[in-house]
Image 1: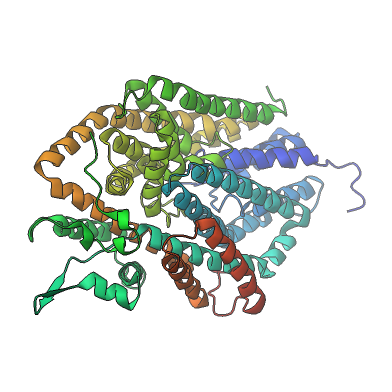
Image 2 (image 1 turned 180 degrees about the vertical axis):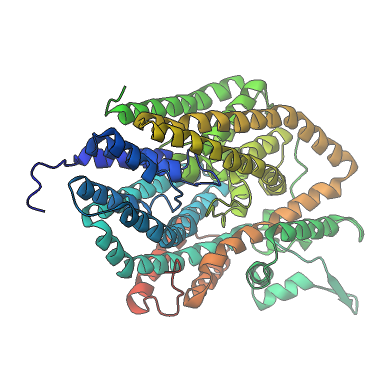
Length: 298
Length: 299
C-alpha cells in the first residue's frame, strides 16, 4: 500500500468519534426489522464524511451500512473496527466491494454476539451484580455504587479495546483473536468465580422451610432440624438444584415456575394447620433473627 | 450543518441532559419527598421515577450507563430510594428484586421480562406500601411482567424510523441518517416509557398501600405468603443464571461457595468470597484450562 500517498487517511479521532457514536447510540433505534442497522450507519457517519466526497459514494456508503445488523455491542465493536479499516482501504482504491464488507459484517456478527453476550451479559454483569446485591441486601449503599462504577468502567474499556483491535488488526486480526482461545479462557475463569458467588448468594437469598413435625412417643421431631443435622442448609441447596433442573433439563418456563412457587408459598402461609410458628422457618438455624418480622407499617 | 464535530457536541449535550436529570432527581426528590416514616409518592416523585425509567432505556448515559447501569433493579432501587428519602431501604428492595433478574439476558432483541420497570416502579410501589425487601420481590416481578409491552411496542414501531433513515440516505444526507437513529425513536420511547411509569407510581402507590393495609387486617396470611415466596423466587433468578455457568467441571465451585457461606453462617462477606473465587479461577485456568467446558458462542 506504498503508492497511496494521495489517498484519504482517517484520523485517529475519526475512529474514536465513531466508537463513541456507537457506544452511545447502538440501541437508540433498536427494532425488529433491522435491529442495530441504523445504529451501525450512525456510527459510520464520521468515517463516511472523512473518506467520501462524491455524493454518489456517500449515498452508496450510507445505504451499505443501513442494512440488518445485530451483535453484542461491546465485544462486537471489533467488527466495526475491521469494517472501518476496510472502508479506508476501499476509499484508497483497494479492491473491496460491497459483498466483502457485508460478508465481514454478517459473518462475524453472529459468533461475536454469542461470545460477547456470554462475556458481558452472561458473566461479568451477573458477577458484579451478585457482589453489589449481596452488599446492598446487608444495608450497605456502596453495593449499587460499586456495581455501577465497576460495570461501566469494565464495559467501556472492553468496548474501546475491541474496537481499536478491530481497526488496527483488520479482519484477519479478528479471526485470529477469536481462534486464540483467549476469550474461552476468560469465560472459563469467570465461570469459576461466577459459580462461587452464586453459591454464596443462594445461601443469602434462598430460604425454604418445612413445618412438618413428627410426633413419636410424645417427643416432637421437627423435620427441618433433622435435615439440618445431616447438613446445615441442605434444604435451600436441594431447592436451588431442583429449580435449576426444572428450568434447564425440563425446560419449565420461568413464568410458570414463578406462578407455581407463588401458589406453594401462599398455601404454605394459609393457616390451615393453625398459625405458622416462627421457629419452623428453616433458616433461624443460622439466622436466629430471621423470624417473619412484624407486619410492615403502613 | 455538515460540521465534523457534530458528534462531539451531541455527546456533550447528551451527557449534560442526563447528568442534569440525575442531579435533579437526587437533589430535588428527597427535599420534596418523604415526610415522616411512610414515604408518599407525590406527583414530583412519580415524575422522577418516570424519568429514571426512560433514562434507563435511553442512550444518554454513554449507552452503557443505561442498559448496564440504571436498567438494573439494584441501581434503580437505590436511586428510587434516594428520591423517596430512603436510600438504604430502596437499595435493599432493588437488590432483592434484582436477584430475580440475575439470569436476565437480552439477546437478539428478545426480552423475557423488563428488569428496569420492576426496579423503578416496583421499588417505588414497595416503598410507598411499606413492604420489606423480601415481600417486595413478588410485587417487582408482577410489575416487570407488565413492563415488557414497552419493549415490544418500541421494537415494532422503531422499524418505521429505519425507513426514514433510508430516505435520508437516498438524499445523501449524512447528518439526516444519524438523526433518524436517535431523534424520532427517543421521542417515541420517552412517550411510551415516561408517562406509563409516572402514572403507575402516582396512581398505583395509594392503591398498593391501601391494599396492603387491608390485607394486614383481613388476610394476614397473604402477606406472610408473599414473604415466603420472597425466599423461594430468588431460586428462579439464580437458576436462570446457572443455565449459563453451572456446567462442566466448574459446577464444583458453586458448592464450594455455598458450603463456605453455610460454614461461616453468613460471616464471610461477598468480597472475601469473590477474592477466593478469583484465586480459584486463576488456579483452574492454569491447571485445568478449558477441559470439559463447552465451546462458547457456537463458533
